[in-house]
Length: 401
Image (cartoon, rainbow, N blue to C red; front, side, top):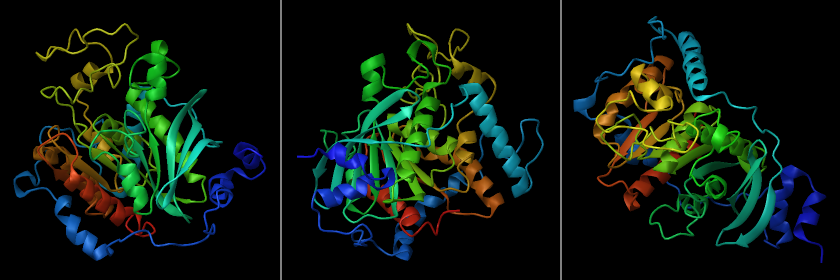
């Protein structure tokens, strides 16, 4: 019997995943268009989620002490969309300079299918691909039967099994839920890296000599995963989003902000701005934005004294940087903060800055935030996330810039 990998070698790379459907005997054609699930119309969806796209009255026009993204670093005002193009480049260049420059993207992917499981309405492929130069990872690619030119979402977390529903973590199976609604999904985690480094993060070129802050390395890896999905005939490259919860929320935030080809993003309670009062908003850690070569000791003093702290994080605080500058890079792409205990409603103060950037560009209703009391996702927050992706990705990108 000819093994599957041998068969795949004689077909083109772009057709590999689709041809598996035929090999396994699933009775659908490559170009078939089956219903994507019970999806409400756009108008109804917007009725459901519109309330999340404007700040409560108490936070409207409140910008706090955050430095305005609509001013160049030399203080010159951004007055036109053309000015914003230059300002956006300035922000992106400055943050890459501080966090470390990315290597070239791995644009030509050659994913290896390790195994395939037939699920109810979709195929689940365990795949291996190169997401950092010289470093491969394994994840799960979920493809609804009959998919062609569909929207897609990359989900990121500690381990890839959680998002496909193969763990005991409640309400975190968003990859599986999205696939059942007609999305192609790719579930990724950092288990492979942890097995090598002992830390749940990514480092380049390695743990002891990383030239890039780990969160930025994770964003770069997600960008390479975007290239994998974009090359598949099952996927519309103009409709690929990214989402994650907590640790994955930080990852999704940096990925969507730093890589503009992501059409949208969902960030679930990552801590969307620096906040030393909350131990889970811990960007100071060496596996996020406080990298220095191990061994790692205490990198932040809860008293607020940053003089003894190491890594990039204290420099960011001293020089007035905060994550609202990265939020602004999303404009006019939509994003949703699925907020819990680490991102209370007053985070609208930071989000107002991105609302203003969108307004300058002629867009509205591109910045959303939902709120729950707990850090963990729940049934309601999942429904809100699914409606967000339905509205902004399902309709051939008509709501995207």
